[in-house]
Image (cartoon, rainbow, N blue to C red; front, side, top):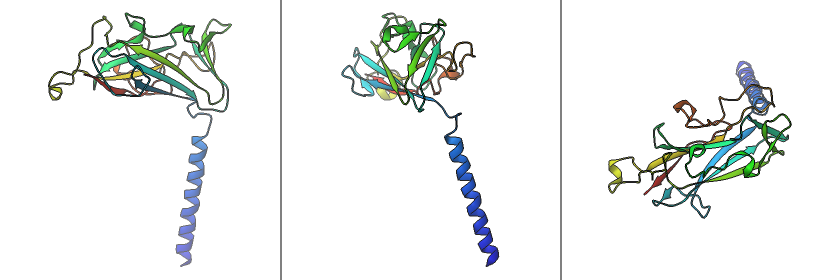
Length: 212
């Protein structure tokens, strides 16, 4: 009986220590400082996953400072963000907003959230727990200016008209000018590679939608 009691006590202490260790790891300074999300909307700003041919598609890109400290993001060019639409289930890029023939992507300091630091870097400043958003519109044309394919008459026969979109911020670094570029988690400038179609602190997940 005493052995059983000692065994239960030992297991309880071990589990308590493991839980305390996990809590420490989850709240330490190495935890992600930012989280980036993307919402697909119609022209009225309502989330949707289905569009008619010719409809305006809106992408609401959001980045949130999840810490209780003021933060800065630094950029080494005027392009602060990018979005990429790909054929569903593939890495085939159909459109990127920094190559849009209609200049639909709002980049640089014109979107109102960025400023130029004394070092010449562009930067976005965040207050504790602050969220900043950018809305980008897309007119359903590809990087050559042609209307992208829509769902055929028999939707079950093809994935044509099925798309996914990712958005993110082209962050150079978070430690300040002179530090190394954070290329591993930043959004690519230009078409992303297949290895860059994964979410990170500065990149959203891929969101699916259909054009009929």
